[in-house]
Length: 108
Image (spheres, rainbow, N blue to C red):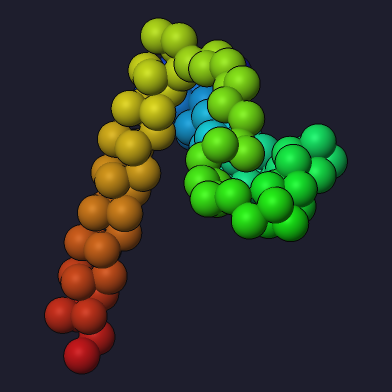
């Protein structure tokens, strides 16, 4: 009996799908929300300074109380992953839209 060869195309598509899901989850894992929360949240020291300035009647500038100690960990792999994710997401979205259009014309 002849052994069936594995379909290389399906293996590659499956691997690309797993990579897409991993990159999508990494992109949506909350890193952006965390960085926004860090921008918004004031430390106790900044809050005390703000309250003192309000009591003293000084001019208030919100930017003076926000700490900007943000490190950017993005690199070439991050940019490549984001581009790849956007491309695959667009391909899948357009592919499904085309499939739905074909199904609409067939059944309606």
